[in-house]
Amino acid sequence: MSTVAILYPGHSAEDEFAELEGIVPGARFPVIHTWEGSTDHDVDALLKLGSRDLLEPPSKEAGQAGADAVMWACTSGSFVYGWDGCAEQAGWVEAASGAPSSSTSLAFAAALRHLGLSRVSVAATYPDDVASHFVEFLGKGGITVTALSTYDVPSGEDAGLLGADWVLDVAKAADISGAEALLIPDTALHTLAIIGELEATLGIPVLTANQVTAWQGLKLAGHPATAEGLGRLFEAH
Image (cartoon, rainbow, N blue to C red):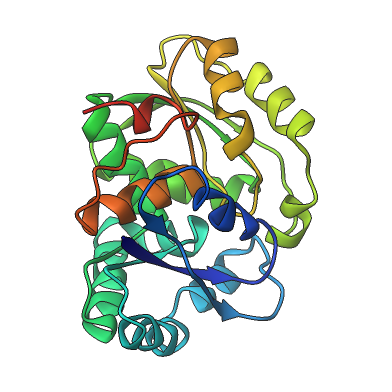
């Protein structure tokens, strides 16, 4: 059994990790909340959300509980630190937990490398100024964003209230011309149940935040990270 501890801010779509335990054989995804306040899509608020002071205590808790890997499950609370800062942030988590660690933003980059893809369209819940940090982050990782759509959802809590129909509509509206994959980068969105439908509709791989977070954590834990119903990422060897 591989245990991937999920460091999760606030309350929105963390229930997806419990659902994953019934989908991915031999895996556990215990959730440790890092923050109990609102998770505003605001750069200054996100820098605080991903700060060392807030991440180290739950990381230590994950390590003491015997996690095989630890994931900071917040895309915007990692990419706002930039490429180098994001790697440093993952280092804080790893040092405090004593287990291999990463974050959702780094997981997106790792998933794209695994699939051999470098041109993506992004459909983001964030306002433009926040989303621009994700585009810059991906660029530093050698990934070209061919198109970006933003939806100015105020917070993670608001994103957690959006249903599958909203996600499907956003995906269908995305400009995927010239893109090899569509990225939907918010761990507050419920997306796992519709990844297969999204990929069938668009005809390209779709990577979502909780999907790549789980995948990267499993890889770090030594798990094969293969499962049915979670898209091409979980099918690719």
